[in-house]
View 1 (spheres, rainbow, N blue to C red):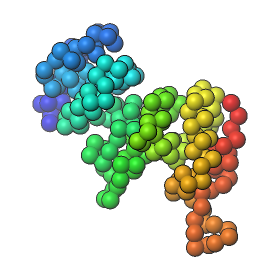
View 2: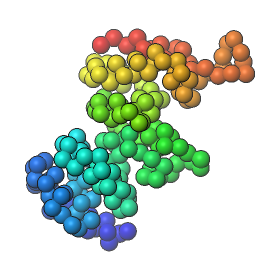
View 3: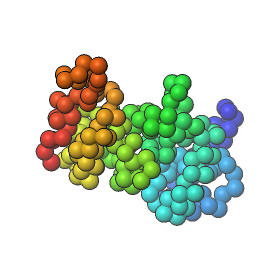
Length: 199
């Protein structure tokens, strides 16, 4: 893997001066897998995955992610598009982990969750898992920043909170049910704090 990583790093340097459009076009023109991985990594790091997806559609994004995964370079791509995380492309998951666990692990690593894009948390397949990951891994201060800077994401979080069937999936914020000690419920204090954050 060391020699491959050196090739990817060299390719990344060779495309460092490319504009967004040049970089995305070069991905389609390139045949070298190391160059494609380098391009995917830079596209993700620059936040250009939306434009990449517009050109290459879901199949192009998925094939690029699969290629990056083979080279162990999928981290920045998944942090830009956590809804694509699976047990196949996220390492160091506990035994028995599921795809929602993989999404949660990626969301947890994202440094600034206020910038998660709409197509990620509104994805029909795994958008709810992204929202769940945000609620499970985000401090009240960061939730407040989300409310102030990303109204659409804040709305998605509130919709999730308002849906009790979804709220029951928030395991880390669970406490014993006062009415039935054999059952756990979502922590109402933590959730109410998240719900009533003002924009």
